[in-house]
Length: 110
Image (cartoon, rainbow, N blue to C red; front, side, top):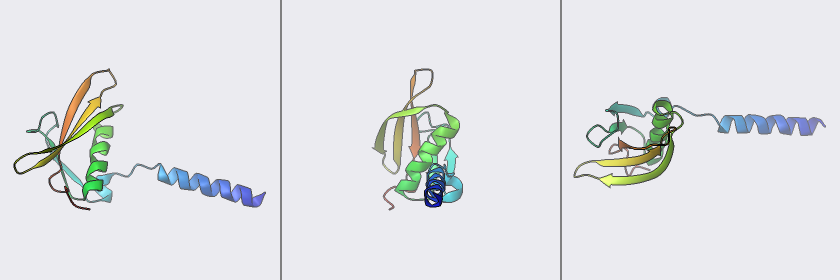
C-alpha cells in the first residue's frame, strides 16, 4: 500500500512538472523586440537561443498576447537577409490571422 501511494505521488509530481510552462525569455536567454507581428515589416523579433527555443518562444508569445488562439499552419520564409516564421492562427472569434516572427538570430542553430 505504501509503495502504491509513493508511486502515485511520484507520478503526480512528474506530470505536474512536465506541464509547467517555462517563460523562454528567462529560461533560454530569449528576448522579444520589434513590432506586433502583423506583417514581415512589423515582425516580432526573437533573439537568443536555438531553433527549438525560438519555436517555443513563438508559441509562448502567442499564448501571452493572443489567448485562446490555435495555430493552423506554419511557414518558413527566407528574405534576402532574414528568416521568418509565419504562423497562421485561428482566433477565438473564428477569424484567421497571420503572425510573423523574425527568427534570423536562432535559425539553423541546434
